[in-house]
Length: 116
Image 1 (cartoon, rainbow, N blue to C red):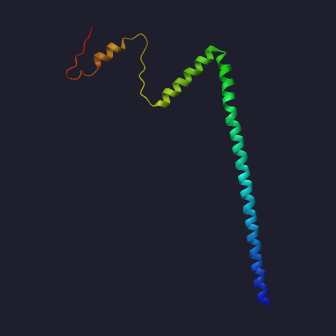
Image 2 (cartoon, rainbow, N blue to C red):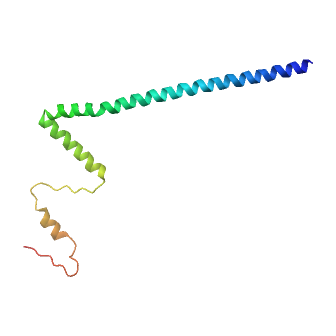
């Protein structure tokens, strides 16, 4: 008789423990989904505000031509660097074309290099 009572108590404790665990998991799931929804809303708000903020900044920058030119020069250099292309820097006021032609490979068969 005592064994049966103990078995019933143990089974009931298992049921209650399982119900508590499930209730906790449900609460965690609700909290997580609410937090994810709120984060998504805030990210959407920030994404909607970004064009306005960038536009205001560009408008302010465009008021000063020196700053504007410097900004766009930096952006151009960043694009060139991120492009991965090879860059050859040529000193100003140099006859580079003539030097390159003189030091280049021989023309392909049938082609003639005309110097003039």
